[in-house]
Length: 245
Length: 245
Image 1 (tube, chains in turn cyan, blue):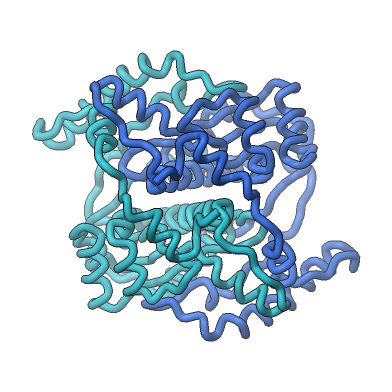
Image 2: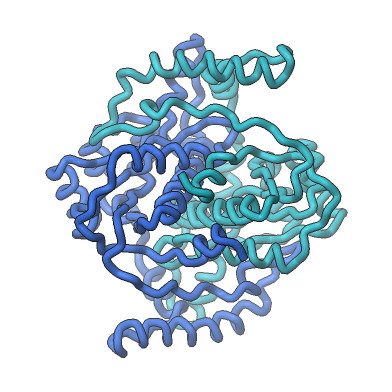
């Protein structure tokens, strides 16, 4: 269609990087591109922590479930939803900030995702690759303590960036019919489409792993969703001042 | 830097569109580019509802707080966080899905934002413009009813798209020093940087409105945050099966 859309469609997570470093001017460029994304009511609620300290990197890699590339990637960024700077803005005008609304948690989290996706795309446009690290939420309290996050701030996810040292295929996505609906929510045909898609995903894993893994999308999802999903999240977020009402 | 990064940096919300329509093949291309974004643990939890019915558009425009462009934009998309298809996947394997975790609400919402930002960028790369409509959450229960959203689905935000019929300036963002931190959260210099930024924002509004509006960032934020933020969100999300634990 055009080079930008081709770039978006070519996305795949990169978890193996060459030793080539990324200079700070490039990181600054990427973060500025992130800032250019839309922000809900101009709140600009995303703070990026660039973690360069080897010790902190090692700790984060372990906290994320031993994801070694968190330690070894040339650049590692943590995207934090941040309502603390709004507290500061309120203090500057002797205004009493109302906190704890679920809506604020949502808009700050969405701001981070819009911002981060711009960073990812900007990086990919420079020939870099990356992977989001949701695993930081495995031990979110420990991660927050390590990064010295105050109340009204929480780490949404991390992002590893570097020069790709692997070239994985793109992963097949759900059929458009499942994902794009007209005028109203109608999932009456979804089971059929998902069954067809399951075959594609199974084939994707089969060819990619030389036959060692064969798993459909619905199998993978159902295996995951019978388990608890980070049940510590809500108590942690309450403690940070989020989702209290 | 390069055309893609220039495109990201040139983003501004477009709220006025020419009458030129966008054909369905283009909408499909944009949504497919959205699907190519990263998705947390492959959950693919974003469903897009393209609203073309004039009646539904009028109703949504009013629900969003009388934002006329919701009715008049050539294309209007609603991005829904959708865990219902995961229920389907679990049913296909006689697996009992665990629902209600805050983590699931978060990952599904983030999936939508990553997806939507790809749609926005793909659209802009084609010379289109758009604006996110968080205002759909003003009357989120009515919006959900109109779109016939079942349990485990909720509308995160809308997106108006079309050919720009206005050419607003980009809006100045917070200084990089506020947004990008090194190794740990340190906001000791933020008040100073925000005070300098406040002057830029005030000047931006002054020149843009011919002197009719002069407001700094911290003033705008503090004025907004002394009020309640959509207090109906948490009870609504509970009803849809989200953030129950």
